[in-house]
Image (cartoon, rainbow, N blue to C red; front, side, top):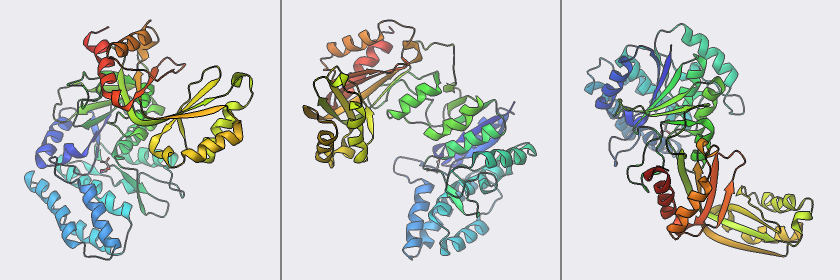
Length: 439
Ligand code: ASP
């Protein structure tokens, strides 16, 4: 069996962290392919190497001297190399990088050097082969990830390796120039490599022991999630829970490879398993709670709306005309409500109102701002009676007024709208009823 292991920036921020990573890798022979991020923050005030590189490239573009910031980046690597007692010099590499920057090799090239150099250090430390991502991860002419070519080339290349380090975050355009994924993109590289080598699992090592049922900034010491399905994860990450890059799910999901989120600082913790499907029910009926503030509800009334064919389409075209995407659309008999993001909507509200009047001739339109949406997600809700009832009685007990309810037909989630001011209390009330009292 093969495992692909990806380590995030905080797992590789210092020599001390590197040695924890080394121990984890050597503890299991199946951990054959390693994807490193660039060195991250060593403490709250520190700067990630990737951010240092972006800042360095700003100087390049402004035709200013970038040598000192570049040397500071070299220092970060040298501190790691010396801390690990490696016989490795990045002198040559930094000369090359400096030359390429002088020739304005591009912001993506600059940012990608964080992972590239960390890959060299990691390969040297582990005694593994270094495979430059620019030779195995490809983008198409229009900048989209080229899954077919990548999968083919990567598979062939890694077939001949017993062990290898492939730096995360970047690949190459058809003309060979470097392109990165969006921020946090090493997660995607890990997933791509796992797919190419038919891994038994993709371990994603970070600084938390997986997903938590709720945001620890709101709930003190929330319980971890042991197993979550891809669909549940999508619902929760969409609503703001973030540990893994959203796009990292696609390559492994296609191949049915589970992802295991693990903690480099607590390797004994089992972490969270992200799977296609499972017969294991979560202990708590719900899998997780997440939410976001800052929505507006646009309430549209029209007598006999339900009998008017095309009414919904006309209303939604008013939003489309103004380039506003909607989040939710609960409806009544003669009313329809459209939830939109407040910052996106605010500057355009009058244009949208007049467009709805022009296109759909409603009786009235009312706006309410400063709303929050909370998603209560769980595959267990389908098989359990009374979940919605419990949520609403918990909210009523906490004196919270529910402004909107929306249950998807998959019965995987219930979305609740409350005012921004009630957001934290609502999450606490829901967490308490399902987790603390273990109903
Ligand atoms: N180093 C990159 C970033 O900071 C990519 C990654 O860490 O996944 O966004």
